[in-house]
Length: 313
Image (cartoon, rainbow, N blue to C red; front, side):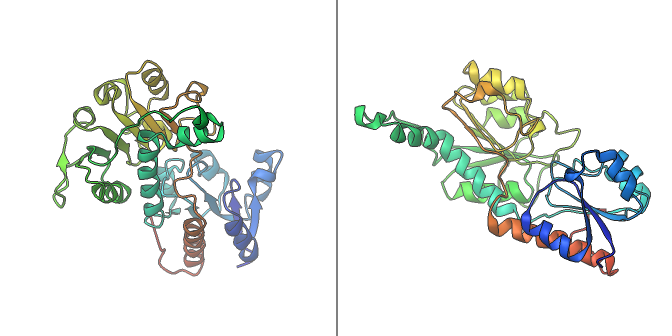
């Protein structure tokens, strides 16, 4: 399969890149000074595109690649891929579901603990030598807090199970009520936020879920409430989040994702009730290896005319 051209959009994983290089004729888009020219020159050689949550195949790229057969995403999120255009042109699309669920759910719990118990601030307190001058202030208990989850899919359910181990009552919002769960359902995000102390964003990003956490939701969550976003940045109205935190209308936030990554609002940097992570939800050696193997497995299956491992389109 060495003659098959694969376009990798951005650097995302060394192991994946090395394996693609071994197996295919790999084109690395980020190395090209003139990307449109690079695509034009190699358009007739490229039969597959590999992207991730931050870089996918939009309509323009799809139109520019007449021989494109498959887009394999090194992520669960596929909002950067024009799925309608892929369906129209018969282009297959795959992602990496399930394998990163545990890591992302683990991180959500970590963010809850980090915000409520001020773990990052306490760490800085020790390192700066302030402990010698006096004890750190009291923080807030996590166990027993009501956790509300927006989106009770794979990741949302995994967060719920972990939070239950801390004796946290669970409630949720989703497009429809789930018949196979005992958790309390609320028909709107505002009602959910009004009835929980920690609000977790765990739904896919669509037009409907963009800014699903807005000013009204933040006000409902309130000055003692905590927002955890392990979904996607545009789920949250970021300027409203900044003002809610700065003004004290929201108690705290644990964020792994942002609206305009890697840009993060600098107003958040000085807030001790905010924990900021650089989109590392699935960022463990173990999980990224499994994700890479899924991308490779899907490509191999496609080019050998076998069933795809994780087909979306």
